[in-house]
Every structure is written in structure tokens, then in C-alpha cells.
Length: 150
Length: 302
Image (cartoon, rainbow over all chains, first blue to last red):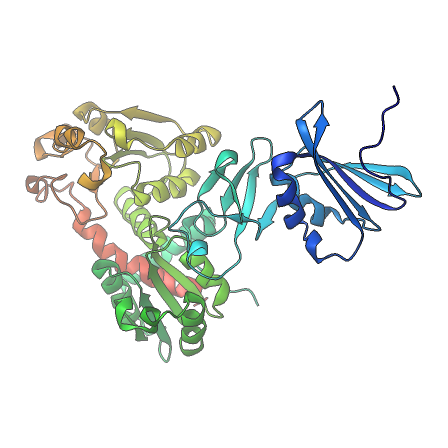
């Protein structure tokens, strides 16, 4: 049986695939997709042999800078990016954790200044494999399971 | 222009630490030097701390500087809801240097970012207290003649005690051997032990406070075991007197051993130790003034 495409094909743009379903709307918000005027197709709860259930985002005429797209590495590290030109996949990309994370994560320490002042948070990524980050301000190390996305 | 701050002890390299200790020594020889003539120093104590504030203010006075500031945030516009950023912005326009204590962790790093003048952290919650560490280092340096190859035994609350954590980080430049003596509930956290392993620093852990360990030591760094740190108060009752130092325990210790304590002490050092030539905690507090004079001059580039 021929496999049908679950979402219509793009002429030019970016497909973000293999997003864990529960993270889909966080990915949308981290990438500020609500600010874009491009055509965007968002699909969720599609079958995935890898994840069980996945989300897909297709954005027409949008090509991400790596700094921009790496913002989602914290919540969806295994996402696959397909760059589409003229209906063809011309590049496949993975996301990777940046060295520094600014403004996305909330510090887990309630006594941290960042939770008590109107200011931007900032973390150093100290372990990319195990995903450990360290608050630039209170110096608390936060493990993957304790990371809170704002 | 790059601005020098002291927020965390790790902001200073080994060479900078040693240069600062040499400076402290000069101030001890001659404490009154009017290097801050015409300068205004702001001491912002959002959280009260008598010892640290008086020590910093003595340092400024001995350097001939003038002081503005407060010792209690309730009398400031912080109580009206002013942000830390606005307070620091305003004060850094008035003063040449900001010395700040705050109950929130990371407040000093943020203040340093916001301020146009140098910021010295006089304690930010449970996070950092680098001037304490530098006065501890100065006390060790002065009493041992070196910082290299010393055996340092830390006793008491090694879990929450920020002074022991900062001292451990600072001493890591100088090939130390550590002994950690603490009740199970207050053991040295794993991240600091990992730090020691990564930096090839030997350490031993004990739950018993014995003369055996004391007799190997060059420095005995005592800390307070606080009741409120225990989830199980039975446990506290059991250990509260176990980590007390008595004079008799020093009988066979090395001649160069000195007992340090960040103060205030409660019952972890018996008063019979006070008259021992090995008791050093009161002199240690005095060293704080010299160390802080050196810190102030270092960040101001004087």
C-alpha cells in the first residue's frame, strides 16, 4: 500500500519533524511562530515508530539560523530539520544544545535573583550529553529533569 | 573599558589571589593608607550582617574613603518596590565602588552587570561570600607561611556551609589534601567531591571527629552545625556535641596546626580552646579588615 503524506508538501521552507507530541506547542512558542506571517502547517499526534506519537511543523519560505533553531534543543533534542527547496529536501539538520541558554529557562531555585527581578535568565550548558545547565546568577546546577521552560 | 568585580572566588586566578594576599600583608604592616582619599564607597546591606559590614567599613575608613549606604533594606525604597536594578543604577552614579550583601542568590552578579562601578559581593544568600574566603586564605597563608601542600580538615556542616565550599574551590590551586568530617546528613555535596576528583585533589571522609585526623592536619576549619538544617531532630540531638573541639583533643597535634572558624561560634569550639596558641579564630576575624582593604584596592585598580 502506498504511504500517503500526512501533511501537504512544501515548495520552499522548513519541516521540523519528530517533535515529541507533548512538546509541540512549546516548540511553536519558543520559535515565536505566532509572530510569523508565513503559511504554517502544524500537525500533532501523528503516528511515529520512534516516538509513538509526534508533531510536525511546516513553515513556508522560512529558513532558520542555527542560533534560532537551537533554542528548541532543550525540549526536543532529537528533532529533525528538513530544508526544502523546490519540493526537494536539500538539507537535513539536527539541533544541538548551544553553550549558553538565554531567556528560555526559568531557574529552579526560588531564591535566585532571576525569580525575583524583572530580568532575563541565563545559563551555561555544562554537560551537553546529560543536559546539565548552570545558572549564571545563583550558580545552581540544574539537571535535565528539573529544567523548567518559561 | 573592562570593570573589575569580585562576585565569586572563582573570578580570581591563582596569581590574582596571591597578589591580593601580598597586598593584605602590606595593609597589616601599615593599615592606615589614604588610598581612597576623595572616593565614596556605598555599602548596601539589603540583609543585615554586623561583622561583615563593620569589617568592610573599617577597611574603607582606614583607607581614608567615605561611606554611604544602609544596613537594613526596610529603610530604603526597596521596601516601596524598587527593583534591585534601579537601586544599583542610582547608587553607582553616586559612588566609586559598591559593596553589597543581599538575601537573594545571584544578586551580586546581576548588580555587577547593571553597575558602571565595581561591585564587591559581601554575601548573596547561600551562594557566595568571597571576602570571607580571601580572609580565610590570608589566615592560612599567614600562619603556615604558604598555601601549598597543606592538609586541611573541615568539620561540621559541610553540606550547606558556603564558606567551606568556597575555601575548597580556592585551595584547589595549591595542591591540598582535604579531610571532611561531618554527620551523614551534612556531608560534603557530591559536586564538590567530583570537583576534587577531577582536579586530582585527595580527600577522605569521616563521620567521627577523632584525634587521629586532627593530628595529621595543618588547618582545622570548624563550622557550626545548625539545628534548623536537620530534618530529623533526633539526629541533631545525637550529633550536636560530637563535632565539638576540646583543648585536650589538640594535645598531640602538629605545632603548626591552627584552628579556624568563620564565626559566630556556638558550642562547636569549647571555650577552653580559646587560650590555646593554636586557636586562631579571633585573629582570623581581624585579618578580615586587611583582606578587605586589599580587595577594595584590587577592584579599584589601586
